[in-house]
Length: 401
Ligand code: DWN
Ligand code: ZN
Image 1 (tube, rainbow, N blue to C red):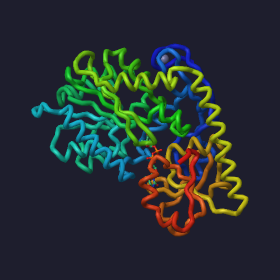
Image 2 (image 1 turned 45 degrees about the vertical axis):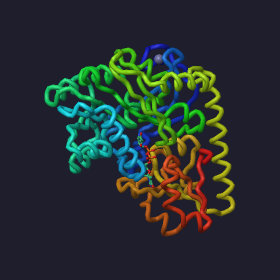
Image 3 (image 1 turned 60 degrees about the vertical axis):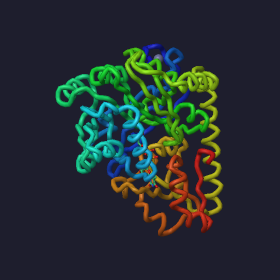
Image 4 (image 1 turned 90 degrees about the vertical axis):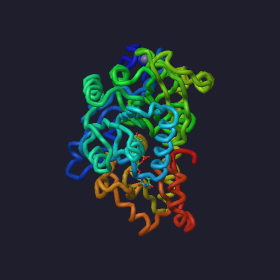
């Protein structure tokens, strides 16, 4: 198997086994025809891109029934408001003819902050259902995948962009060469390409292997991002660690030589070398850590089940699909999962078929144990669920919280 970025031979250092589409919550009658693929992470020793070996067709993952709406978290709404303010302050000082583009703009959680201020903007989002929500909220959105054709069309209609943004999107796109070529077309000379995604350094530290699923074709390090975008003459000019999604990184790039480089770039690249993110042995050790994590979680669940405890899941996240299918956890261990997203309700979790119930079920009858699949929103959730913990309920997770 070849690296998607540099065509070098990649090392497939482990397999999580057969996996369904992480966000394909399904009805009973669809169990028989459920789609599975082999989820195997791999590492390229040449460009340092951490990637999954096989990714299902994009149409299977991003479509008119896409089950993730960004606005489900209050903290994420605040995060995106600050992200927008930071972009405006640092990169939109032209005043006249300012134009911001976002790739994978989902329900408009980031762009609405520009829309409210009357700043010219455009979201490019392939999943029609989430895009319609954005449009209803006044966020100008084009339903499509971003590529060179679309970049040229947008250029004709709107002019060049000051900033192309993305959040939790770039790591979903297999052909990043197409993205950098398209960004090159659409950006002004001093324009910036800014994106943030779950960070490889944090995933390795926390053994948060649930970040690996069909949609996340890459888990980036700065070392890899530098190599990926250098091909089209982009350079990294800043790196800003974020606490979102269990530890993310914001990457700021521009056309080579057009802007000053922050000291952070050198510092973080050096840290990554110290953490051996450029070495295969790090990932072989990660595999062992995943196996130990799996054993620990199963031990906790089995022990509590034998004691007759009621165990339910909290939040049917995409990430939970990897945990449940890798550890083979079904309804015998986790009775059901409560979630706030309406289109997941009364369906079953991908692969292991655990029933999904509306969030209200959680409050109706507290379980003894709630497996916190949205561990990345722990602070927000614990604040909301003080009563549950006061009454003796316990949150557990495969991550040491
Ligand atoms: O990259 C991606 C990230 C940003 O979002 C996508 N590929 C898909 C998605 O991943 P996820 O599903 O793991 O995201 P979250 O934000 O960790 O979880 C969202 C799910 O959790 C939704 O179904 C709503 C649910 N939830 C809940 O039931 N109660 C979330 C919160 C905060 C809550 O309090
Ligand atoms: Zn490579």
